[in-house]
Image (cartoon, rainbow, N blue to C red; front, top):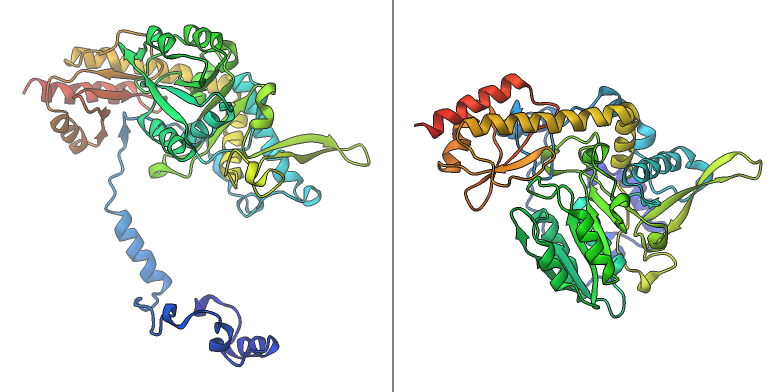
Length: 439
């Protein structure tokens, strides 16, 4: 790090003298000799900016960038208006840290407040935090908002995203909670199985709407079954779908969570993303992270403050139910700029186009020999059977610049369409599928 420290060697020597040290050996005298590395680190010599740029471009060139994408499964290819990047890349937002001092953080606090407001409008719930690392961590954190002394069982739908389920399982393993998966029937939650598994020890049930396979679940029945046993309902929702589907609050959900990536964040090979989380007023004080609130200053002018900080470093410490130590403020800002730019009608148009194009794609793929697996309503993802080896089909599509659907473990394929897909490319995709299925 020597070349990155702005102090000269003479200045460093002066600082050592000021604290009573003759050299660096004196400074680190308390460190045991056996743990000191008494040689130089085996690192290559530094490179110039041009050399590093060439090296990174060479590595980036190994990635294959597809111009036609028909895969979702948690990360979605949506159009992002130019203004989203223009606003969110302003240096006052990029470099902003935790807004502890409200007097000098009004802009950052307001951006978080606006984000929370929009999430509440989408979900229909009373309070939103700001925010979680991603959708999976939001789901896992929400589980422990529901756990009580005698309620230690956690139920989760088998039809949820496997990566989200894996994250919930990790959290449960570390906190001594019991996790059980509710089986599925025809691609949706088996509501009879859910009813039979519920008991007085059940804290909550996590499900997704739409689920991982794109199917729209019977959430009304699930909600009734869960609440009859005094448990909480947690819904994981694609935020874009909330522009056309009923809000979680309409189903009686206690908590709504999800991946905010579709709201103006590029897929970016998996991150950074943000997890949104909203809850009823009853559950508000159990929300992890932070809540920014609106107030007035001493002159009666509108202002913003950190109203709630449920961080373990603060008032709760060892009693904290969460170890979330940050918020995805820049990603949350990006989402709020995207929602502001699109507006309610724009977001609805994205949702309608995505659903319409997915249904067109499904019909075309069926003509090509890929039969719809679950004959149930879906949003913009769906599963098809595949009469040929899925790896051969994917390879053929990739050779023509198409990223096909996600092959599932049982030989089926999870397809996705968004407003970015055109009729022409869906027709060409169908022709490519026909070439493989009929060969």
